[in-house]
Image (tube, rainbow, N blue to C red; front, side, top):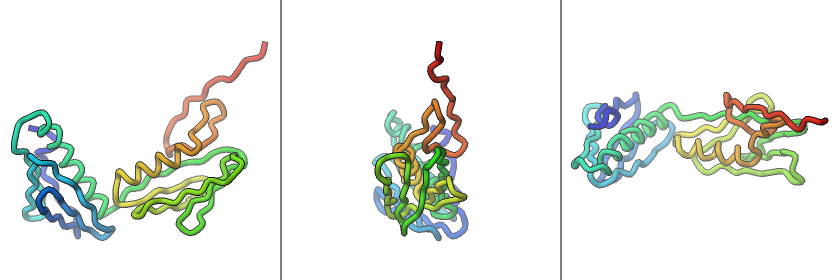
Length: 178
């Protein structure tokens, strides 16, 4: 039995889960998320707790048991509290600004980079060099943060670019003249 999968999920206040066939719908104050349930995995909602069990003992069912439980935990946490990723930008002349929903970044290219987040994700700016990515879907928030980081990844020589808050960039030594 999966150690993760057999743990019951206690739902936070104001979160409801409904199961219809192979789809679980999680609703809360921050929105609604849909989690697909694979065949062979059974989800039961009873008295404010959700339990996930598997019908078979194949390797695929064992793998999907814990995965489905964690996806439901993340969905319940997302619709109640939400998820946040912070990105730090560093570099001389690098600037960021919000224009409506779009994020406009000047990162040393010949043109400004404009990024529009997908629905369900909000961008904001803290101080002058921190980008905050927030939303209910953990996977989508992480994906948007990765896309923003990919625009100008941190340089190990000058430590310029966009990095995750708290990420450690090991600095490399440049060329040494004779």
